[in-house]
Length: 283
Length: 241
Image (cartoon, rainbow over all chains, first blue to last red; front, side, top):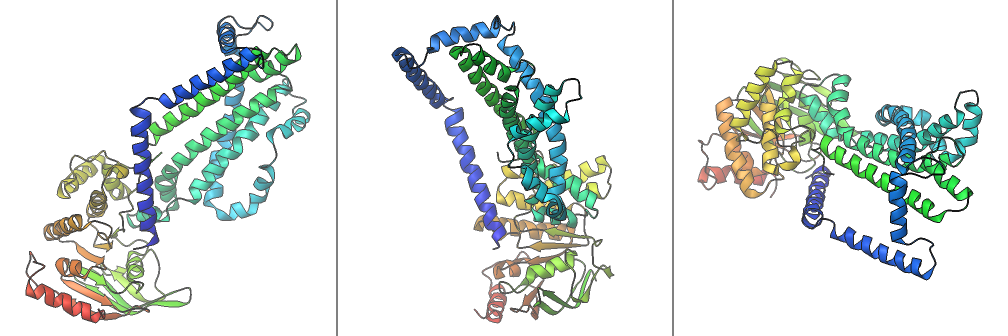
């Protein structure tokens, strides 16, 4: 038997294990582990608050959270949802542009090895640059546009979201099973276009979905940082501003926890959508 | 004559993998290709499928030179099904490429799925099927467009004993019904004798044809019969076991 068949059996084994674990713990006992972790966290937090280490206890924070959610912060006349919405809008534009470029480029780079050799240097050079490092350059570049800060924020998110998506896409194209391409050829696919449309593109869908997921994650981290330099009152700008006007601990904590919550929800949402779109894949 | 392989040599990376291979298959032949590991069986199959080109010699399929356009069907080890397509879509793949109408495709796919006993599994994805069922889909995917020659690369090797025997029985029934020409690579001598009417034995590197045996035992064949074991014994002795 060839190496291929061994790989194959490992693949099916791991998918069986994954499936049974899901069926066993996550479905039959819905999240009791998470519940326990949440309660333990609250207990530790409450203890620290009672000892005076942390200014806000869970209960006061919860009240303020509800207040911020419904009434908003009177100093800014904005609710938490409005601020998160502003940040999300920036994220969607920046990450959307990044994906629109990263997915086709990733496919091209993954498919044409020579292109990778030719331009790979630039990718490898730009990848390690922290997205925030582009901020000053962005200000100079976009100085003449009507809203330079907005475009700088878009650019930071763009840089953050681009590389994870590009990498995941290029990688899955490279690891496309050559046997499936041969199978398509023996079944009568003669033209490159047929191989591309009927074999390569469908096979990269799971990789693209996980690329979009991690791109959104990194982009979301970047938007918060990008807003520290000013601009519209998104959640990141709020955190910094609330700190500057007097270090309001509870508001800061509520804001960063909401950032975490939104990131988590986005991640789960993409997972859910991915499972729907690529039902055939062993996630 | 469906297949004519004439004096074919194949070198890969400077090494002689196949040397002076000549094979002819008539319409309706069920031939098995066997030999020691690494003797170039799969390489020969890939040459005939036009996936690679011979270093010298020629391969004719149905009278024209084999190559990228020749009409053969290839059943891969483990099936090589497209994981993102359902059973039905996998089987329809070759028909779609041949520009068949949706209705014709639907009818042909359903007919062949009934034949390979997969009716009811049309909407399943490959990951939801057992190894034996995946092999049936792979077979149906090729049978459905009625290629001149079906090439099979150890299709049953990864299956457990019972599934393998069941598939072998079904394979014979399908062959008797549809009369395709088949060339199948197998390590399993027992399988070769059970299935084929021609057995081609390759010797070790470089792969050369050692002997071709015609198997004329009546079907259904019984593995414990004397004529069956005699042929097995003969092949085993040729392979030095």
